[in-house]
Image 1: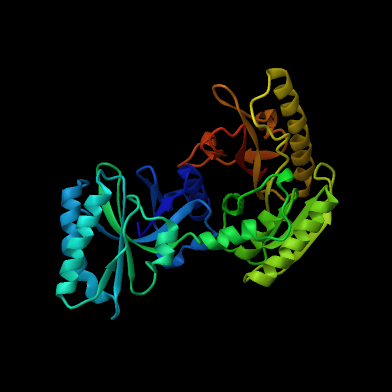
Image 2: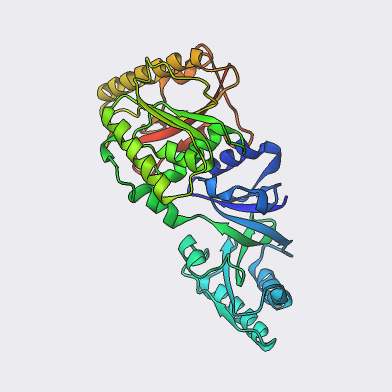
Length: 392
């Protein structure tokens, strides 16, 4: 295994995303928040991964998962490795994941290493920890992935521990711009985070070669899925039943091309009811957030909730029924559909029990279960269940 990736708030979503793109055999989960990937870091298209927070190159297996042994190893190793970094001030940060220690212990470890490096005549600066793990802003603003920067990451699953070096981290400013700085937004139709849109695309794409592949979003809304797909290199095709959403998507994609380096060339946006529309061919990938139903601040009574589920299920059922004859066998799809947080468990669309009859096979992942693929936040009633299908 050549790379290590740390994962986001719901790690299984990131693991399924990597499994979709690289295959189950290339992925080895490690602890609760990381995964080993049998791909060299330079060949990992990190910018398109929504479920991973940092990309690291593996350096060494540590002598034990206990902090005193790790501390001694790091304090000894940093001075031995500093000559591999070009001349100039060296900036070092340290993140510790899955190891029992404290911020003070990390600080003492780095100060010991700093003294040893300075004794060799090298100027060095330490990035102070606010928590055991540095955040993306600290890594970016302190240049820890630059030529003269090191973010060392210690990670343990409780039995084994590894030392790795960060080579890339999530572009938090780019995500914020593509979310909040877009000219057309509408909270009434939901706010799909760009990172989640990336994960939906990657689960549907199952390919690292999007060039000349056409991705369809039949519920394009304000165009979040289409913008992220365009940046990955897909040609994009979007439809929406609401004329205002069609205008918003066109405006946002025009803005995207002015602000970002967009690899995808072809764009087609048109008005269309996803339960009846006939899409132009060919369609290589389908990725979208479908109709999620009525927004809910709290769980309604069972009668009201049953009505919501029935109406939402009807639209989603009619959509995938309409889509099926328009797809070639083997076409892969990822849909974000609603799931409702009940008192004891999530409630799902009834149509999910009839996918085979509708012309689809549900993809099963090795390293994640169907129940792992529900994107939700605490106290959120309506969650997004990511279902990955293949046209039969």
